[in-house]
Length: 425
Image (cartoon, rainbow, N blue to C red; front, side):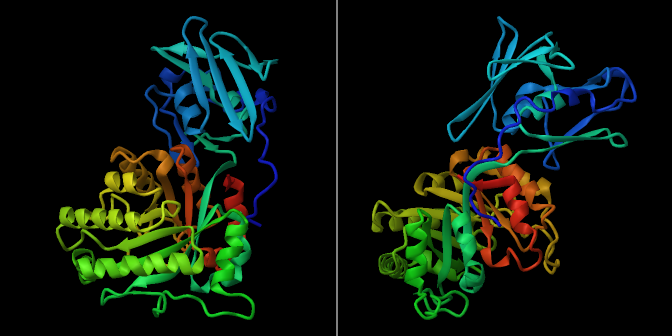
């Protein structure tokens, strides 16, 4: 079950140090061998110095690997030592390696290494398997492609689930989330905000279970319940709302009333389709102004989030940088890259998801305000870890799953696959 555990998988600080020599080489020196590639969670790592193999040991620049794994890395040029430190729930693992020394210090204890860190061309290179094993990373070698594959360890992060109308059969997944966005409202094509639409509506009571009780139950478990508001600009209808002060105000009043009536602690705006047909800059400004007005109208303790198309999509009407200053966080909907009509369970391309994250960060959005949106409809138990690995690699705030009602639709192993990679913070 995708449920919070009382403790995180412990860092394997001293175990498996001897596997440093387990990655073989057909040649003894990297300068005579084909290039080596290193993948973390099936996505290539970019290095500022090339990985190399010496005497069967694979060496990589220490900072790149450490930062990708969320490990704090420090270099002391005077003592020629690398200090790698990781803290989880108050427990710190500290590893100290010294250039030229086969002895490491792990939480104060001396541990023998099969190979020593080296310095080449102004970069400190560390034995990959030795270093990664100390922090619970699974490492394998493909001799044919000369590829090192690393699978990152489980990590805590903020997890958000989208709970739509047909999600009640998986309501038991809610406790595994830090926050839940309830997809029960939309702005209709005529510009009117509604909780009674055909696609999104407040669910009918089922005995003692009501919309209010579901929201209250989440809040009682310290899970932030938010109202998701969906709108689409397929024929310019969303632009019409954003451009009309009267429609704008009515929708904001409707959102404010729903938040109060149902006890929501936040609002997630899922406004889609902007910047495809109409002027992108103008639509960016309209959305920015709408979010400002909404923020001013809601109580200060109500969180605001936006689910946004990725910056490498066809929809350019989203000013990520400004929206990040207005909202508590942004969700990158890094999916629907596959052609229309693609069957379910065809994973989104890792390269495009990676690019979407990089573009958001380059746009000036702080990583602590970004959640990576993951479509469960697209991913498989084998591929969902790749996407979560990217969220971990860039140290994002967390991940958002569309949607809870799909977790068991295709494969009951999805919950376990997610939990193997991340758990709620």
